[in-house]
Image (cartoon, rainbow, N blue to C red):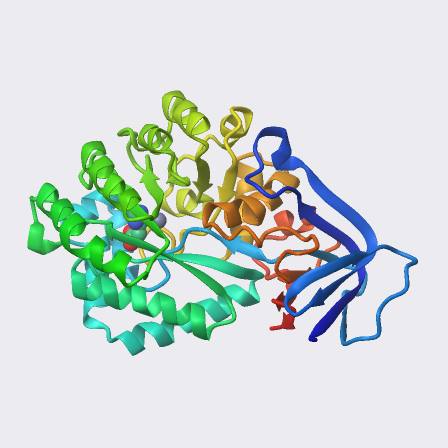
Length: 406
Ligand code: IZC
Ligand code: ZN
């Protein structure tokens, strides 16, 4: 039996519960001082309180510092070709995200670069990104397709995502997102492309079991609410969990639809108003908020406090992608969530662990408790407040994935 003892923990802090934490539960953290955690065969066996005997086995010394569950990044577009730094002058000249997309740039320029890349090229580059994320304390992440936008290239991206899960220490959850933009082949014909996804691409992805969730960019000039409803209902029929990029730029009804369909999560929600939030609360939809994207796009920030007040579970993710958020640093998101969403450090911890894990169906991750995955981070910090405060530095000292030191 493989065992690892994490000893001399100054403070163990974890979200609690086995479902999404909402309202006051979001700030309910368990804090245990001076303890140890024993991991057996990759699973947490026990939390050993101060004064109790410690087992004889391989160990790592936390040196009195903070230990939390490994972070979970529940929203990324990590597999892509190229970058988009060339958009900076356009943005400085006043072009918005949708202006650049309309001119054939934005997502469509990443589609061209991703189609041109080989499967091995995408894989090797993405392994490097995952290494960097792991070193920043992330032990589980989600990755969306959506830079292929045709059968061949969507399958290529999803195969890369599957291979990353098998070959990297990171747990990787795949989401199918062919409905990310209208490809040049269907220019001006969004309805035709949605039909094509439903009849040709979705059935193949389902049959090959290449994704667990299905997502759509429900946005002004991209896919409207009727198109989103149609595609998501087709995906539900095939057994996918549902996600919606809703109200990132304009409030066109994506959050209302998310609640109505009982989507697992709605993402972004920068422009969401009361109606959308009430619908999500009624539908049990998790809000996956992406603070680095608001920061990078120079937008306002999602109404996180109001969401918590209404009982919507809030998760926080990086949104790592080459356009609206070229940063994969989830620690940075924690700081921005604290300072701009006005979330407390306890609420933020729940948002990047338990609620993020729940948003991607990883119900054995995000909490430190017996029976949960042995994914832990020893931080160069005494408490979670310090993580939310020291932005710009990597505060992760040692990352442990399924009981192995990475
Ligand atoms: O490549 O621009 N918002 N999709 C929806 C993105 C941002 C990613 C991108
Ligand atoms: Zn996104």
